[in-house]
Image (cartoon, rainbow over all chains, first blue to last red; front, side):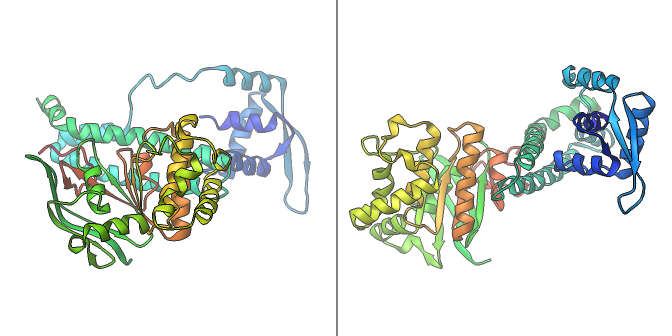
Length: 178
Length: 229
């Protein structure tokens, strides 16, 4: 989960309050699930407990009280460590798509698995078209384009897997039910 | 949606090998339709039959309610010069001519004056960000630059339908994307229909709709690969 590190990264240059962090998170990571306020404050609470951030003051700019947070030195070290660490490239193959194919074969047959694969392919294709429209809009922000690129590349990989699995589903059925 | 171009029961064989078997397809005014499927499924053959580059063995191709099979070869050639644009994987520019001369060629063949054709070619080259290459021959351009010139040449006659056969197949991902974005933007601006042949799902995603072929037939599952026969 990268949310705590994104918040630390946003705090690295200047103190911010919760609302500001939420807004900056959603702006910098377009197309991601918008951060809920509850999640912002819960994450800040954990970061504060662990000594990575601390409160630097409060104000009330015509609304409710706002608490400002700053990153601490241990917070900077923690962030630096995370940035340098290479993410393990998926040591285990876990995917709901794959699980559904196997369970379809366990409880039904190759026909059921194919029905699922075909429906999933349609859903992936539709989403890929939506994302392509977002990135192809005249004047699209580069942040939106890069985020859409990431999602499209992953959908593309899934689509290739869906197509190949359709070719292999009969053989897989023999192994799973044999 | 008003149907602009349609194929009904199209069949085509190469010797004893069937390439298309009773294929039905419709393309609406201003619609971008991707024709997808694995290698050898008949995608390019369908594009050739729809664009009139090749005659189908059976079935009808209708353009603006006219059965093109009833037209003379001369009239169909005229249609290809004026209302259809064609773009292939490799730009197929004339190596001895400059970019501007290549792009102006369709207008000159259609009888336009040299000055007018040149002016229009320059404007298309600029729109596709290769205006600075007007005096350069294809051999001195990158693949992406050549393909942009080929797009300009395909669009200079303001066709109502662009037939594009794997137009980004020879390009790297980013360059291919730029070429495709250019084509789709122009198509949306002008209400031009596009028949886009590709085997890449991410390229097909630029289209409004996808028609998938498998073994020369339209595959209703949309998978192309897949259901073992």
